[in-house]
Amino acid sequence: MRTALFPGSFDPFTLGHMDILRSALKMFDRVIVAVGYNSAKSGFFHPDLRVRIIKDAVAGMENVEVCSYRGLTVEFCKQMGVSCIIRGLRTTTDFEMESVIAQANRKMAPDIMSIFIPAGHEYSFISSTVVRDVLNNGGSAKCFLPQNVDIDKFLKLREEEA
Image (cartoon, rainbow, N blue to C red):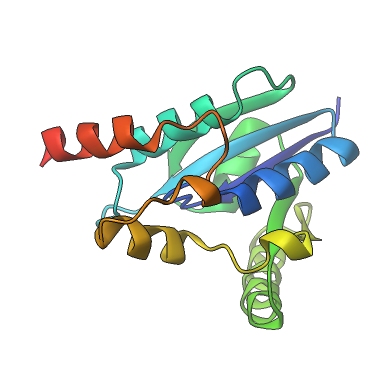
C-alpha cells in the first residue's frame, strides 16, 4: 500500500488543502494529513482543534488518516513508514519556498521524496492566512472551507480555550 504524508499547519484547513488531498488520493492508496505542532508559534486554532476541523472536513473519505506531530517532518515520515511527502502549490512563490524545504529534507533523508501538487486555479487564491484574516475581522469564511466544517462551532471552542 502506497502511503503519503500531507503535512502542514492547516490553520485552518481550506478548500485548497482539500483539492490537494483529493489529487494525492489519485496517486496514493492512503494519505496521512498531519498537523505540524510548533510550540514556539501560537496559531489561530490550537493544533488539536485543527485536527478536529480536518477530521470533519474529510468525514466519509476513505483512506485518509488525520493526526498531529512534533519535530521534523522527515523524522515523522520515518516513524510512520512513509517515503513520500505531499506539498501543495498555489503560486511560484510557494514553489520557491517548498523547493528549498524539499532539498533540505532530501539531504536529511534521501529516501523520502517530496511531491508537489498544484492547486486547481479556482483555489489558488485561498490561503489559511486569508481565511484567518476574514475570521479575525468577523467575516464569514464558509466559502473558503470544506462543506463539512462548521467553522462557527470551532470558533466557539477556540473562545472557550482562551
